[in-house]
Length: 272
Image 1 (cartoon, helix red, strand yellow):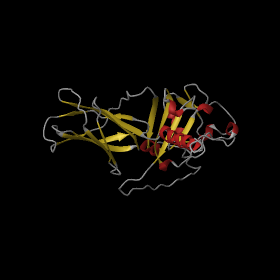
Image 2 (cartoon, rainbow, N blue to C red):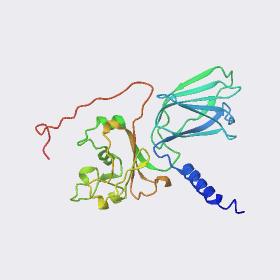
Image 3 (cartoon, rainbow, N blue to C red):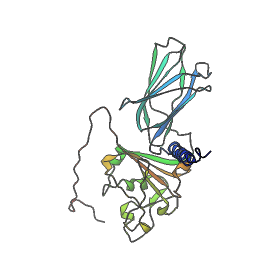
Image 4 (tube, rainbow, N blue to C red):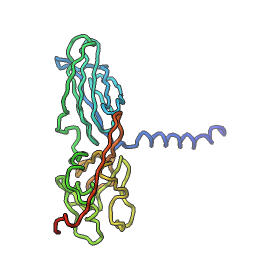
């Protein structure tokens, strides 16, 4: 007994670390899930489902459950292809599926009877209706962020374009000039700012720095962001208002980049 007692704190500490690792939220990613059936509507169990990122070629493979369902998470946002194979059925592959931040993308399959070496190719977008959770919000992608007029190159101003969000109450500290916004009547101080799944909220008392966030990345670096205004999941925790969840661009196997010029000239500006 005297030998085992010193080991108990170590075991408890190790268990706590393991549980913490398992419980960590992946709020800047998405999920692809669905059900595999045959032409008669019966579910296909133990089918092999492979999801591949079309930009990086990174892939993950799972098998369907006894109910014919599969879930692959967490996945970085981007374009994906999903391939399903099962003995006695033609292999089916769906391409061009766009996965957004915090999205649960449903990709269901109806396999046709035939040789597994025969492949059915399906190209198309995922359904735009999100029925997997009750959260209310909108995704603002990089094309919108770059194309819309944005005075000051601050992406948080675009949150005011989402239904339910508007400029914050009048104040004299410059917060409205730094992207301050209110969602569904809640106070702007109750909003939650996330960047790549990490807390991006300032700890300055009463936002004395003039901004509610800590890091403001350039808009060219942002892949997309999602503003959730209500009914979001418990993993976001602290927010009584809205959740502004932004994610940065990542690399692919193809060379790409951007260049821009920023001109501020008072002769071209409109009068306030």
